[in-house]
Image 1 (tube, rainbow, N blue to C red):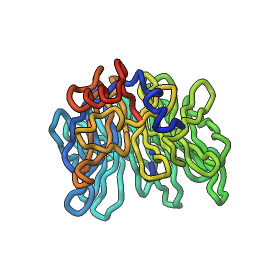
Image 2: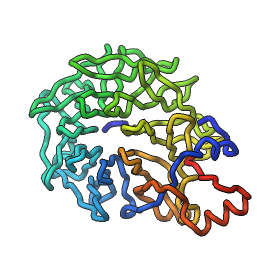
Image 3: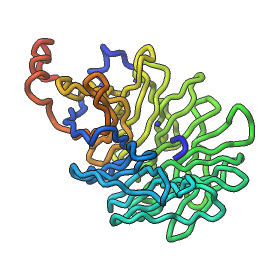
Image 4: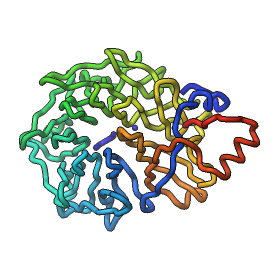
Length: 353
C-alpha cells in the first residue's frame, strides 16, 4: 500500500447521531496500527519491530506476527472471513512483495513484470487486489485470482492503485488520466474486465478506498482544494463533508452502508475518527465513555456487525495503539449517566462524532 484514508457543529452533532450505538472499547497491544477487520472481529495491521515494522493478525486477544520474506518489514492490510490476509513483506534487499497469509504461512504472490508489489485488499474467495511497480518504472493496479495476476489498466496515465475489492470481484482505487502535472487522477471501478471512471466532486482528483458487496464505494475527492470523504452509489458521488475542518477521508464501508474514516476537527486542530450512517459525520469519540480517557483519531475498518477497527491514544498520548470498538445498545452506567442527568436530557442516546 503506497498511500492508501459532517458539516455539523459540535452543538448539532448529538442530534445527527441520535440513532447511533455507543461503543465499548477493547485495546489491542500498544503501538499497533490497525488496517483491516473481518466479520469475526479479527484485525490486521502493523507495529514497530526489530529493524522495521512488522505485520500482525490479532484475534480474540492474541497477536500473531506474520513475518517477512527475510527483510526487515511487513504490513498486513486486509483480512477476509477465512482469516486469510494480504499485505506486503520485504525481501533481504528491502524490496516489497505482495503476499497471502493463511494458516500461519506467508506466501509471495507472483506478479509478472514487477519490481515491487503490495497487496491492499482480499475478498472471501481469496482474490487479492493491489499495486505493483514495473521496471519502467510505472505503478499499476493488479487483481490476483486463481494463481494468476491481471493488470487492471489505467484511465489513461501510467499510474493506478487498487485499494478495495468486494466478494463479486469488483475492484476500486485511483488512476491517472494522463501524464499532466499537477496530478490528474480519478477514482475507478473495475468490473467485467473494464475500468470505469467514477468522476469527482468537481475537482481534479478523487480516489476510492473501499467497496461493499452492494456496490457502494467510498473514498475522498478534492472539493475547492481540500479533500472530502465521499460515498458513490447509484451512479452518484456524494460529498460527506467534514467534522468542521478542511479535510476528511473515508476508509471503509460495510454491507449496511456504514462508513468510517477520519476528519479534521474544527479549526483543523487535529484528526478525529468518524462514523457515517446516511445523515452527517459523527465523531466516534462522542460514542465512547469519556471516563475511559481515549481519543480516537482514525477509524480504518468496519465489519457487517458494526465493529470498528480504530487507532487512538489516552493518558496524554503516552498510550497509543489499535482499538476494537464494539457497538452496544446503551451507554454504560456511571459517568455517562451522571453527565446526561446533569444536562437534563432524558432518554437521549449520544451519537458518534
